[in-house]
Image 1 (cartoon, one colour):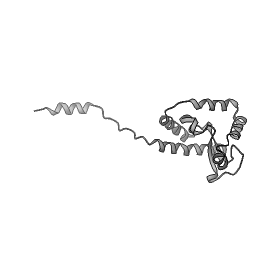
Image 2 (tube, rainbow, N blue to C red):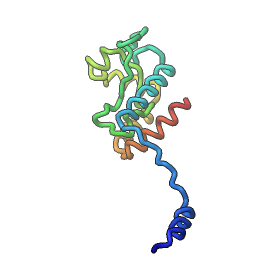
Image 3 (cartoon, one colour):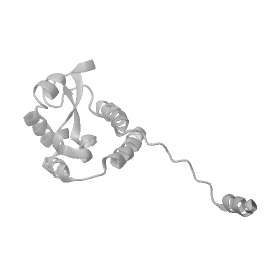
Length: 142
């Protein structure tokens, strides 16, 4: 016959495992992060198109555009506030971001070094999920 009392004592001595924090899906994380990015950019720059200067942006005409596009900016720049500015629908969608005027405004307002740093940041590699979690935590405090 087996002595179960020793087994029970050993089980009691082992520390209880903390339940794992359930991770949200990366798509849900991205949606939450994008909402925060739009909120911050709109508060900071208002409802004026950064590229063409159109004022009074509202509703579906008020976009948040990227200087370095998502397709080439990677995870580091996708939700980076220094890469985002308000744009009208026409500039962001119809003109593909209106890059020439966007670039000109960035250089005029922020300086050449700022723009060069953004271009250099295209090559930064980060683990997307971890980076997005950190950004979301930071942006919620702003």
